[in-house]
Length: 155
Ligand code: CMP
Image (cartoon, rainbow, N blue to C red; front, side):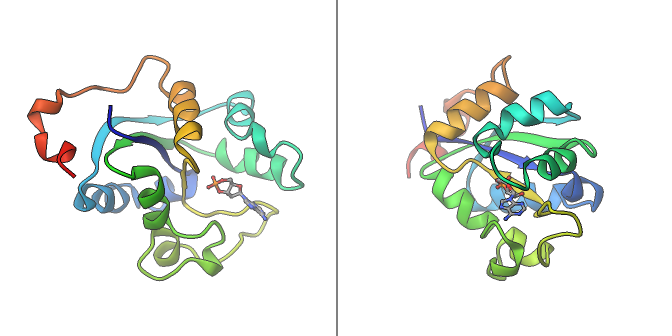
């Protein structure tokens, strides 16, 4: 199976109407959308998603942020999609994200609370992607036949 990553448009990205723009950037790059849902998650789910960060001082603010509104959860597929997806997204702190990246174009800096409102999340490794996809899509991503989109698998 081709490489997959988990991408989440955070509540600020949804509320600001950036969903179409963000999806478009991944589509135009040539990645393949394998799963998508608009979903509101509760505190315990958000804590599970960010469990690796539970010791960080910004953890509770981060969880408050993620549960503050619906998010768009997605699975994207394609060659090097984890690393390239992170390049499309830009650096974690929008103040350091290059123009042309999603955070560089649509966010300014760390937000008012302790929490960094940075529009979007992308898995930081193939293994994290596997875990995050399993958490967010326990039913399995929507699967299209690879024969319908053969060019995705030729890179
Ligand atoms: P994300 O890509 O979702 O991965 C972890 C999140 O933690 C990150 O984006 C930010 O939203 C948040 N985060 C990381 N570092 C900080 C920080 N120094 N202060 C506040 N939030 C942070």
